[in-house]
Image (cartoon, rainbow, N blue to C red; front, top):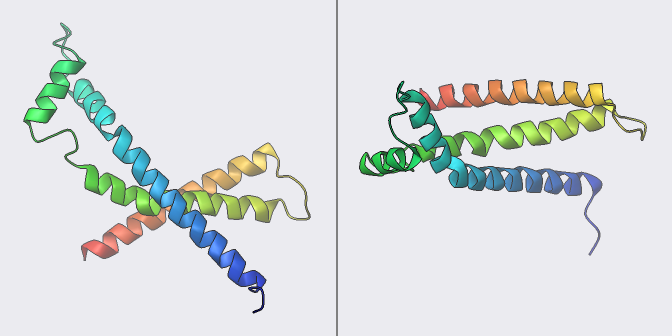
Length: 132
């Protein structure tokens, strides 16, 4: 049996990066979602006298339907957005740093910005298409 062609290995590596970044982003979102929900509720219901603490707000969230209400759209967003951003950044960084040299700070920042913008635009495009 022969070794896989270089293109097949590259595709498998890219697929592995996309899969792992999607999975890790979903796990991170699920782990931090309750904290973010409490923080957001505290920011929205800020009163001049303080008006209660974290535990009171967390209790209200649980009574109002749970601290994980709304998790599905957040995870779905990260399943597509994060791998586009991460794999896109790695591809742009390696393209800019051709010839075996390391990309400079400005090149890395530019690659990160461009990959973030592209991922954000592609995410919204996919969402709009799915809503039709």
